[in-house]
Length: 85
Image (cartoon, rainbow, N blue to C red; front, side, top):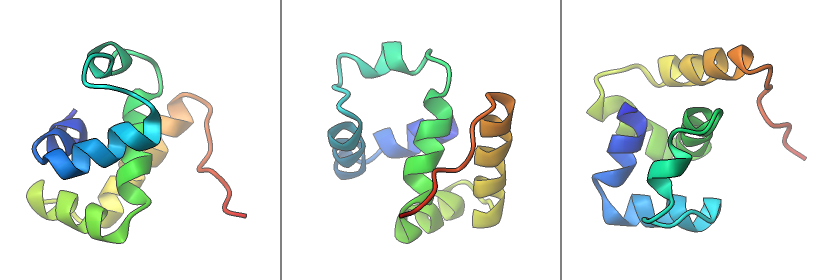
């Protein structure tokens, strides 16, 4: 949930996340309880180098640990990192 809090702490970051996911401020709370939501949040953060560095710094984490956390969540759901074309 720390990743979502990080996004929500900055309107520009949150706005970009909402625009890319199709969520709205009214629907994000319900979506946050859906399986895979936190994985999607970490996917979003990990897809942008500056964003992952900012989140890792804000959370006192190594960016590699953020990706590892995303991978653990995805494996628990039987998901894999999206392939790049």
